[in-house]
Amino acid sequence: MRNIILIIIITIAAAALLPSFNTGAEPAPPRREVVNLRYWTAPEHTRIVLDMSSESVYQVSRRSGPDRIVIDIPKGRLAAGLRKLNVGDGVVDGVRVNRLSSGAQVVIDLPVMSRYRHFALKPNNIHPRHRIVIDVKRIMTVTEKRRKTEKARKVAQSGDYIVIIDPGHGGSAPGAASRYGPSEKYYTLPLSKMIAEEIEKHRGFKAVLTRSGDYDVEWHRRIEIAAEHGGHCFVSIHINSNRNRRIRGSEIYFLSPEGATDMHATAVAERENMQIRMESRGERIEGDAGQILFEMMRNQALNQSSILAEHLADEFKQIGSIPFHDVRQANFIVLQGTAMPSALVEVAYLSNKSDVMQIKKKSVQREVAKAVASGVVSYLLENPPEKMEKRPIRLAVHTVSSGETLSGIAKRYSCSIKDIKSLNNIGNTSLIRAGQKLTVYTKAE
Ligand SMILES: [Zn+2]
Image 1 (cartoon, rainbow, N blue to C red):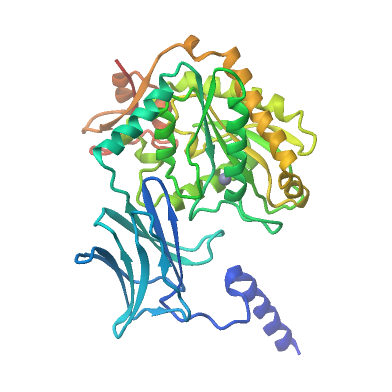
Image 2: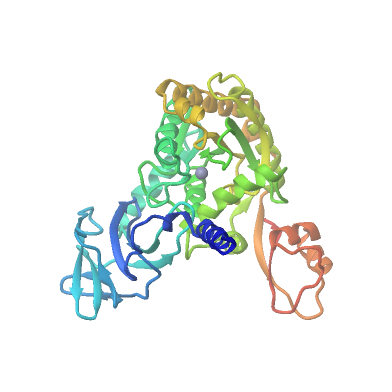
């Protein structure tokens, strides 16, 4: 009897340890099977995603006559009923599959050969499957490129207050999931469009969205779009999620390079950052920030960001349908590198039923949009950017030579040891080694 109980306990324990996507009674899918094909058209690329049953070895090659990108999965299989994709967006004609004796083959047909990149992604708490991702770049003519820059320059020089609204996630990155409705990306875009509409109702204000459709935008591209359009402030729109389904309400965040105000803020930043890391494989991230050499009015922007967050909070306190928590600070990747006052709004909790019921209502969305718009407008009117002290600070990369010390490097660039430590994730040690690359602040001319 004791043995039986023991076996039952072990079985329960083993089942509890299995990831949630693998607990069903269905037999495990065969290894290296292409389960599904998906695509998203973005302004600058088309993303093709192969959902795989397991981690898979694959090779990508380009072929011509006709132009195509071929993904070979040796010993791979194709799921029954796997249908080809008709894309036809000017970048990709379509995606088809071939069953070969050597394995599975996925062919991306192109109207013209383009640059592409590929990477594999492991499952996470949002995507239960392994994935192979291929991004095919859109080829832009010189005229198209010029027209695009011209358009952004016109906005930047319009003399209006420019507000950048950043709809969180998009495309293959759905954001937080919810048991009560669609995932985060389905709320952030319509909400951001509504916010832009509300902002433009104010004379002398223009809103620019970092994405206008359901597609992936890398975090640094979001920041570039903000800079190109001469943004005066940046507001990223998200919907929160928590394991505790009782937690609800809205929260406003601004950047803290030193760390979060509390455990809750750390968890929220970690969730959002984890998704950015997943979504931006192969791209520059955090530690490489020095290579971007973006201009940062750091102390100024941070100080202003806290004022912007307070203005937003004052408006959110008036919303009756969703309770407001407070303003918090945490280290969000998407807020790093914005040379302008910036904030991140977590509008509600997708893990809380009452919050979802509210945020699904158009009237509540309108209320939230008006709150963001009023907060941003009152902030900019009271803190006009012209009055901001212009003290641009740049980031640079310093390679340590032998014999150099942290204090010596700090002195050379007129930045503090604390700055160097936080920029490079150096803990309590003062030890550096020759050849080590350190990101430092340096005063711009
Ligand atoms: Zn988010």
